[in-house]
Length: 134
Image (cartoon, rainbow, N blue to C red):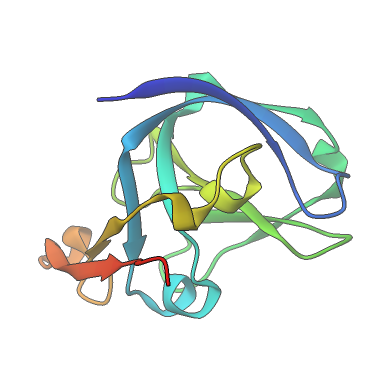
């Protein structure tokens, strides 16, 4: 575990947050929504994540089982975080929203099997994404 206290915001800055995130948990998922949004996420306990500005600007999106709760800024549309279906005691925080951090700071990111979700008898590792600087 590599726990760090971070600050972050959506693109327009209307939504801001602070969190203690586990940098060692960086991952992607291949489920339908994660595949389309392409975000790298890190885990934070629910108690360790706080919206510091713009909670009223957050829009909630759920689908399928409606267990995972995905939050987006209603002004700029950026996904900031979601409450995980596989572990509802955690948020997955969008790395691209964290100050001074980029998804491209991770050379290798594990991709989890979300198409066959762990709560549905699937799960595990689907593969990895690699980033190599040109």
